[in-house]
Length: 364
Image 1: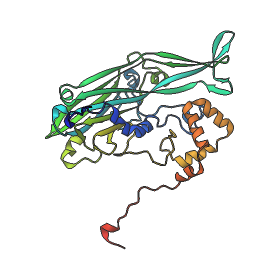
Image 2: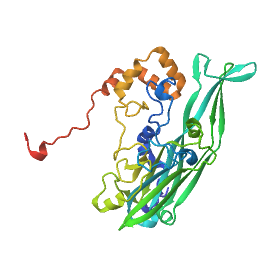
Image 3: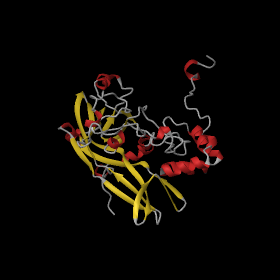
Image 4: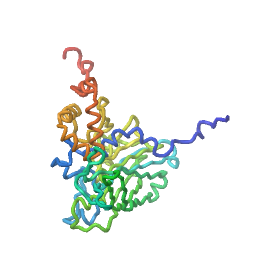
């Protein structure tokens, strides 16, 4: 078996480096997806989908243009990321992988079998399992790959077309579950420009291209044509990204001139070759707490408190939560089966203390 010289070894498969950001990116994707107490009847779960909404432009701008702020809690028709980088090595060999991730809202309807027909119902029991009519979401992702010369020469783009779809889940003689998704049309584009000596700016844009949703459509109707919890991962080979939150002095002016709209990029992982642009403002190098046993989907979640509150739910409340969403059922199963030593690890963890005695001397 022959071995290729080191400089001719194949590079990583585009997109594989995003695995280092998977846990944090998933937390962004499902942040606020379903809030404690995880029941459909809960008031705060009747108005869902709060972050990273890229919606049809006509609907969003029915009352005027949306201010292009950084925070992604406002509904907009666009999301833009701008971040700076240096080139390591030869410019013609540098390249970037961009991954767009979002949720697609799905309308789930329980239908009871009656005399050979299916009748929509609010709730359906089948083989001892309860099913509720509600909304859920399906994760989506799309990749864009480009070499730096292409990005500098006008950039590249990808259109995203998700056709309307219907899926049927039979429930035996009881009935069925109907999952209906509306069409989603969007674009993902990327370009770059030189902004200084060896400094470049990468621009990534996500736009909703829907033209069919009326400006007076209801929010639930418009969101079924939207991208929800939209965020972008950017990986560079031969690129070294700069912190946009705490930039080095030589790029501070270029950082100030960058324009991030409804998202903000932060460095993630161990090196400066990976960026997460999130609608939820994060610090550089965000991490999921190592003692956290799993996502609880609740904004600014405190695992110990939410776990204890979930354990305190009544059997009727747990039954409704399980029927509301499969991810709610997963939370209940995980919390109900959580060993006491795992729960104990969630209590009183501190990360902000540091030893300062070496700087000023003992006892100062």
